[in-house]
Image (cartoon, rainbow, N blue to C red):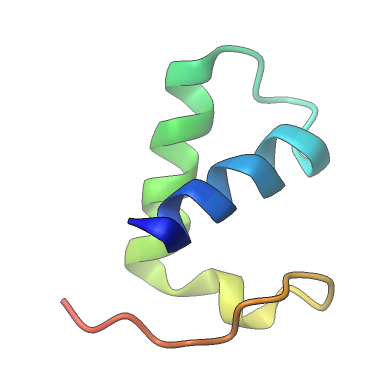
Length: 51
């Protein structure tokens, strides 16, 4: 769950269109499930999460 928390923090900083905490969490979960974070240049964690 550390990766999800890191994604949520990243979204809080970089995703201005997400205003509510629920929106941030939902978007972060979508990014996690789609493994989209691997393509973000400035996101530090590049590990792959297998589900």
